[in-house]
Amino acid sequence: MAESQNSPILDDAKARQIMLSTEEHYTLNLGPTHPATHGVFQNVLKMDGERILDAEPTIGYIHRAFEKLAEHRPFYQITPITDRLNYCSSPINNMGWHMTVEKLLGVKTPKRVDYMRIIIMELSRIADHLVCNSVVGVDTGAFSGFLYVFQEREKIYDIFEQVCGARLTTNIGRIGGFERDFTPETFKLLREFLVSFPKVWAEFENLFVRNRIFMDRTIGAGPITGELALEYGFTGPNLRAAGVDYDVRVMKPYSSYEDFDFQIPVGDKGDTYDRFLVRNGEIWESLKLINNALENLPEGSYHADVPDFYLPPKEDVYHNMEALIYHFKIVMGEIETPKGEVYHAVEGGNGELGFYLVSDGGRTPYRLHFRRPCFIYYQAYPEMIRGGLLSDAILTMSSMNVIAGELDA
Image (tube, rainbow, N blue to C red; front, top):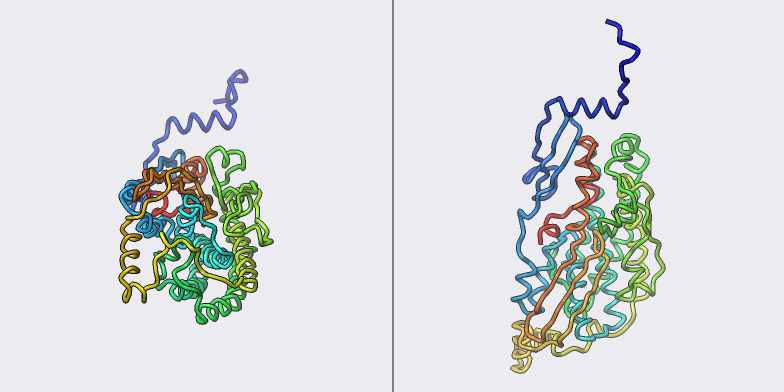
């Protein structure tokens, strides 16, 4: 039957709205235990076929009450807690905490300590971004690149092991500096890594950056504008991928970052492809920073002169009563701290990792708040995937580098 000429003609948006109101939708649980989430958190998705109509994130599955724990631990015993935030780059968390305590105490670290910290923190950033970008490759169907670059992450962990004896949860460094100087073996492993890694990473980039299949899967997936990213409180690579040039190392330099010349990669569209490219670019800049810090490593002490908070040498503890007493007092928090409140932030693997510390002069913090970048930017995830396909949601989550340990602290 012919349609009357007086019948209203529906536009596409109106027709879509009517269709959604009449057809049956279904709920899909993405997580909390799903290999594609790469962590323990849940997304309750309202689906129309393969398209996501709405999403509701659920977090807290591995909440460990870190902030409350910190209120009952001496300052030194908080360092292992920070390991368990973003465990892909533990040393950055450790050193961010140590710098916060140093800020409260008014401690100025020697240049050698600053440069050593930069070397370790930038190695951690490489390890962090390496995991993120290789997992994005896995989620687009390319598994071999992930296996190939993980050999390089093991080399970074070999360096960490030389410095502190641990690999993943490092507990590296001390308030005031390091527990020991870099050994000749550490320098050897560092120089070998600086020779081998650039070749491997260049091959990884060649595999993905101009790969048509990879580009088709990632360009336009999970975009966010710079304005919206700022409204949500984004920092780090996810913010820079959206076109906002903000990096804590440049805006509020710490650990002598102002001594170095390095570029901040910035994206445009804020999509999965841009986040991938920004992290790739940051890896090259981290290599440049490590090279410069290693070649210009100052002479001097590997720790500041803070006997009330720096653990005495182990050989002295074993043979000297006074050293044993001091070791006990420091570890058990028997030395009072200044009263006050400080905030210190470092550029973590995922953005601005901040520590808000309130001290009432006692043996433990009165209050310690961790500003976890994952917890902040993950709130935008439903908005970024709404209207997209399920496969794009997986890629978006991987490219944001959501670390459950940091999200659920």
